[in-house]
Image (cartoon, rainbow, N blue to C red):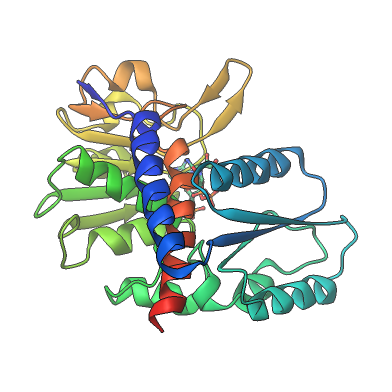
Length: 286
Ligand code: NDP
């Protein structure tokens, strides 16, 4: 069994991005800049945003944090997004989720300029992904695809089963793996809470990607022997942080598996850095 080490891969990728940022700044005089918007005081969101800021600094990029109170209205937030869309010094915009109840998430995410949408949530960017000509790729699926490539996991012609159909992970992951291109070309199945005889479906996966948010849900009997298992889940339990996969049992039959923590998690912020650099480059190219 091979352990797919997202932490080590993330360090390598960040060093590569830092080098690219350095070259870009030398050539253009422009430093890529990510604007993060945090509304309210959700403790987990504060940690995520702080980590994103630190990561930007680590690769030589700028970041700005906009903190708004929990009672912020939708109009106030839309007005800030509109300012950031027009700000030529900002290349990527990140709206930290979840947003407070009085704000409609979709309306706000749709208001982010597709050219600065480094999370790739805007419908225009989702459409481009589906058509196989992405502007940005969503960070978590992007990290997973990069991990499969760099570990030399063949995807062409193989059966990728994606468990979970969220807009953030499951759906874009499936859309990416089905594309006619390197690092994809897979036969793809998506399954979810309404899937009948789920173990029979997950057992079809040569590569099984799990993103459901249920601690240790995927047990050994749900996995094809020799499969590559990617665990996206991050679940806080009394026993600490655990994934959606029962790691100890599944590692005995998988050919490769991601740990939690230290698997997919570290790659997500790294891909956000890559997307912010890309956003800055796209402005120069246009
Ligand atoms: P969502 O909660 O948005 O979606 C969960 C999906 O799992 C849904 O499609 C749901 O089905 C399906 N599901 C839930 N329970 C079952 C079940 N018992 N059997 C089959 N399918 C089920 O999840 P996200 O994609 O946002 O997140 C999933 C996990 O990944 C979470 O633990 C989250 O914390 C983690 N995550 C980690 C990231 C990282 O950086 N590593 C980034 C993003 C998420 P249905 O649609 O039918 O309801």
